[in-house]
Length: 417
Image 1 (cartoon, rainbow, N blue to C red):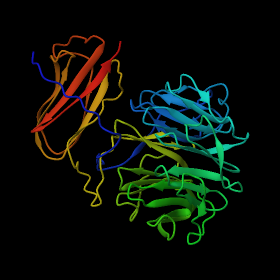
Image 2 (image 1 turned 135 degrees about the vertical axis):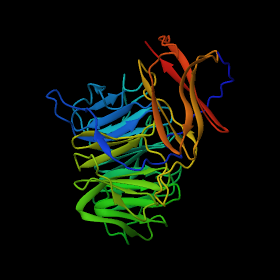
Image 3 (image 1 turned 180 degrees about the vertical axis):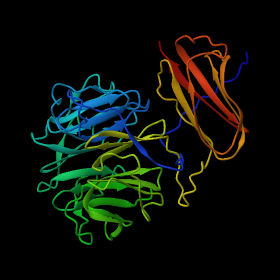
């Protein structure tokens, strides 16, 4: 037995990954209704352990703990028959949803829910945005409401004549709202006042919205995507498609932008919106409503017929589209906790001799999964919960460690039985 000093590190979701050479999609096993029909999914989100949540059209919220193999309805009776229009999950894994029945949040991954729209007139709650400092906005059919304490208290923020379809918080002062009847608006004072930024865009129906880390603003409209580098003073059309909505825009790792349309499927830009490619391989429904990324590197898409998942983990794209890993990365195993098997994936930018070993909490090596030379690329292995000698390991915490040249990274996982 070998003893090691275990250094445990966490990676933030999808940061610094690189894409596999081919991006394709596969349909998960749900969510479905009692008749076995796939449900319309309007919102998706993922917690830090890789669990996936799907908000549906009039069937509440579903949860999957196994990458979409099985789904369980985790709705509260107050919104089980509601339209779930938007979902947000913060850094503490608190889930927020806007629905036709109100605003709800869960701090225990859907086991229980609390309604938090007290002080807002009854009506349809379309959009929702929350930051880690408590700044919260919800968009309704008649304006925007604001809270400074995660929805404990609300006040009217403005745009009373607007149907507010989508809201994005850039920082504690800057918020952008897309409306369905008067175009986009911006606030630079935490929502105290709002200014139209539609003059040179001239698009009244804003259904998709995203803001990049470089302060590049993207809006989805009927017919494509526009962007602005000066907060809406000037606009350029960067994606032109047939007369269908681009209803959702999702930015991954800064430069990489997914656009989901209502009828033309999914488009991807790997250079911050300058050029686009269609990525519909494996997609069985071209009406795409939502995206999210997960801690194990997969991207999920909510559609009018269930949830799709990328066929392999996604790792960083660069503008040259070489699809090679740009740095060593060891990803969180999935599922975690696991029983009886779990998958571990990593990326290698160069060829090297690599080892991937499992250790118990005392630092004793219990299994070796990889011990060979690997060329540059992305890899995945399955761990079946057995030691090298074939014994079933007991429940508890284990560590897996990747060594490749001078690169060493260790992560924690939990085996349950």
